[in-house]
Length: 111
Image (cartoon, rainbow, N blue to C red; front, side, top):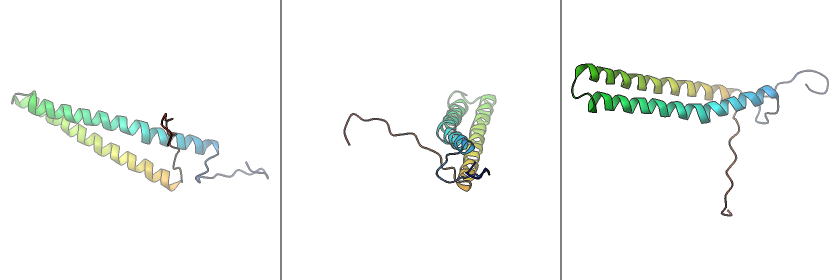
């Protein structure tokens, strides 16, 4: 609320309102925590699919097919995550929610 009692919303870089702060923190968690973890899991599934299809299968058609399914789901996971990540960043850019970055860690060596 401003001085004359009306509500004003500001999505600029000076994010001081409650909902703006929550949205900024949510975007920070999605972009800097959730997305890297999901990419790591999808990459591990993809590598496991390669190993299962070509290394551990010993040429058995059923195991090769199961490995190919894991490869397909790994690629689908990458595509979905990149799409969602892009949508989140477009929404953040549209409303001016750049987010806050983690502070630099303390250093024992003077800069």
